[in-house]
Length: 207
Image 1 (cartoon, rainbow, N blue to C red):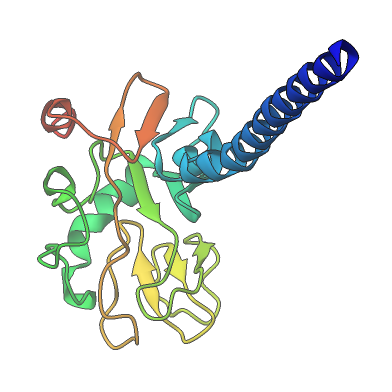
Image 2: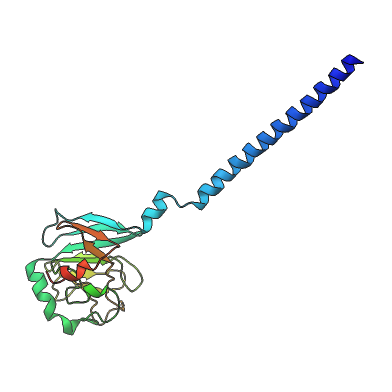
């Protein structure tokens, strides 16, 4: 009888142990399942970076040269214009559809004939406003097929749209609007922050 009582106690202890073990294992499994789910809800650093501002170092950019940065999955062109090309921008109004940038394709501080914070540098999204193709940068000397009055700019070979060196669209082409100017600011003489601006750009526009 005494042995039987001990066996009963042992069986009860075993049942308690197995129940507790099953609970722990089940809880661990639920936690393991929950971790990937929670991780999926939290945006990764890469996802956050896609829409974040991008710094561009333009210290090596010479007059007439252009560099391409990527922001929000789009190409952003940074063109350093020569003094001659900047001076020629004011005489192109008759050839352009929106010479005064009346259509909101740029921040307020870039609503000028240069469409930029500093006349020397143009910053635009490199996508044609017709169907989103990527135009080609064509210098003043590379005017074949663009007419004798070509002063340099951007030509979209897809459907023939043309833009001047301020990204302003020519008359009589499929593209309906000027190239888009993203928000940006100079955070130093050689670093541009694309995708973010500040009140400080108002002062920079006059320099």
